[in-house]
Image (cartoon, rainbow, N blue to C red; front, top):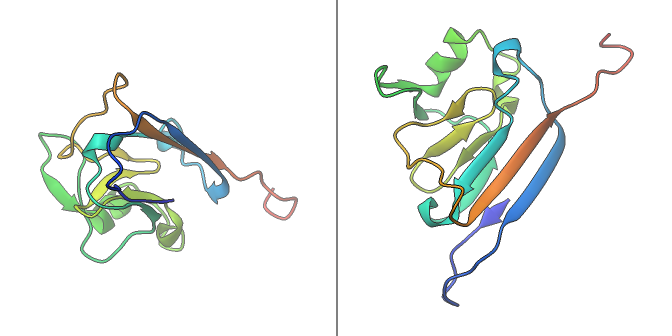
Length: 130
């Protein structure tokens, strides 16, 4: 997903993307596989990417900001899986992390305004993984 703001004026549209086979499901994060972002809060280009060195994330207002690396360690995300956890970000920084939720330092989602909805589904297990 790569989205920029053009010069053709305001738009009234919703984009929905379904990405399959990209995410493992973690017990305590299984409800966090839907990302909703208001179009007018996106700065620059909206991207789905992996973790980057130096990524910062605010889990809730009282806990302050931590590196995404520290959050993955705290949440016991296996080291081998960390590069594959989807991160939704724009030019300012992280908006949402699959299995963890929204960065609370960013604007809250308002369903009354135009938005992007991104859903990540858990890949079905193969016979070898069962």
